[in-house]
Length: 555
Picture 1 (tube, rainbow, N blue to C red):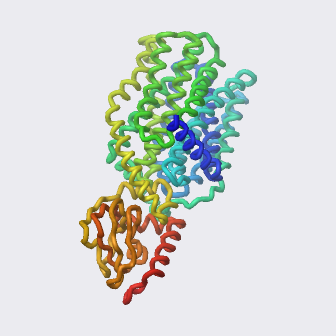
Picture 2: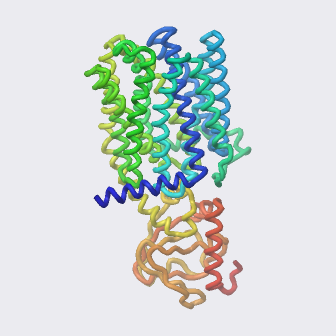
Picture 3: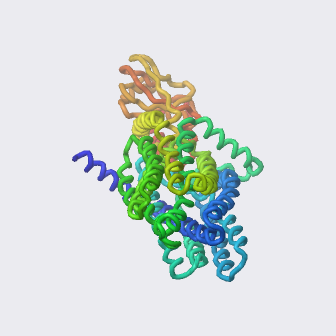
């Protein structure tokens, strides 16, 4: 009982940190508005396509809409690694809003449907890097892994709400108006999404800027190399693609189930889609308990299972009440996936290529959704609707079970890293650093043991490392005089690195020392490249030099 209470308190504190941060609030609301717009667009466009040519047209239009965005996505995502990421989100909101508004005008004036489809392609291309930019932005607004997990939980909850609100708005507007009305509402939501992040106030990571304008293709390759080099990250993205393939299947299956299998009519498409949103809202409440969890990999695997298994059961029990309940279970899986998957991916990928990695993922999402949308009508023709539900729904559970052992391994490695982060967070000058920078430091930590009586370094040596004591004690000597004794959790070595001078004192192991070490090329850019950390580092250096200033060394 105490453990549950403690976890709930952790969740409360983590969510409160999101609410207290103006930047996080606005970034989260921007996501909710953008995703409400996307879901309304998806329902409205599916109805337009179904009127034109049935289930096959729904799948074909989805493929045509998503493929160009998938191709352009990785290229566009490089922009979010080269400039402030919120500016990318603003541009996306404006372009999508304009495209969706024109779609409404064309359809309301009985213009050519092909123009509506073409504008939907433009809106989709513009929106493809949105989640990549947003996913890369969130870690820079967070200072601890728990705050990042809670930020993804909040975003997952907003995703769930938009999964409910977007289709419901579409269903109501389809009932009282037309698809053109749906597109107009989606345009307004998209524009608001961009406006919300106009003035975020945070210290953005350094970007290559103009010097890299001719190397954007190289930037794309660098993101792909970072993904290929990390097998755990690649596995997570592969499982995520299986989920989005199933999502593409669901876009078509929802229309077929609502209109042909359950006789719910066109508005039933919105109702069934909203059932996913209802489940996602309840799932988001449960997913918030993942804040502080060291088993995100296993929860991610479960979320993949929950995306496919309900479809198998709908195929076995094609009843309206059962379908609504089972689609709600998919929503629960979606909520778990948003929190666990994006938190893990953000921590596994290097920050400097984070948007590019997410851009590749978003491109694969678009392609897999389009592929699922095209494959589904073919499978329906071969197996009928119920057979297609069973066959396509089995994909995710099978792949998740095959990956279960490796997902447990990811959990073990992240738990070890969190222990290292706890040590680093105890260092005052490192405490202000955002999550991506801290994870970078943790990835580059090495361990070193120094026997009792042996020096770690001597006064006058060239400084090449920063040290944090994991266990043991050490004495600091300046000009052969003992200045102080260091214990577990204390750090040393920063003066030579931050002031670029020889070692100002000797540090000798009083007992067996177990040390965490960071090399100069990792430590200095992290501290000096972020204002609050640089200020804290300078304060620490001044304080130590006030205690002891060596002879003959200018600092």
